[in-house]
Length: 87
Image (cartoon, rainbow, N blue to C red; front, side, top):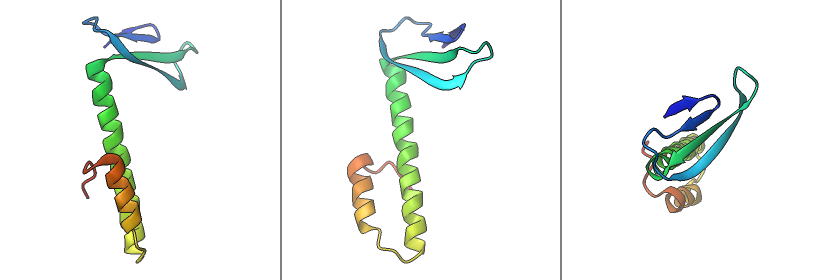
């Protein structure tokens, strides 16, 4: 990605699939904005899903360590993310 002020543009000029804005401010006080092509957006969403699934699995492990039945939580995680989370 090329940085142009507070806007990021794809150097290969692929069609844009997603735009984002971050709450944090840049050095000059403007909100940072980004744009993704389909390939990049897909990768970012896969990373996000994987991290969220791992976080759910970690929480399940903590509850399980406290002798809590986590069967329903595991079913919900697997239905949502498939087998993305590996302990």
